[in-house]
Image 1: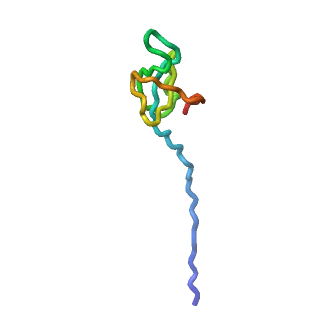
Image 2: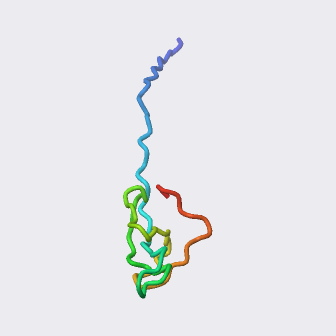
Image 3: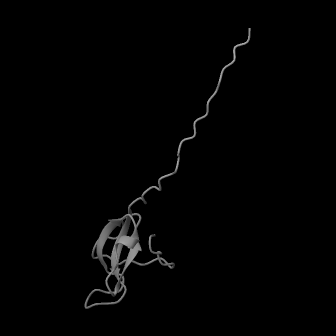
Length: 87
């Protein structure tokens, strides 16, 4: 006597949901001197999921500070390559 087992395969929708970007540490710093605040002066540190969500004012830029090493009032030296939007 032979035992026959039937197998049924069901297809499910496995569309991947894109993961939200992990928040990263950034600093807002001066790109132009203003009064006693020299170029590179850190205005504030912030955590952003994307740089697309924040537009720096004129004379300022965002810099990646992964280690959180630049508190407000310190001097940030930007990397030689700029951080692209959405960085």
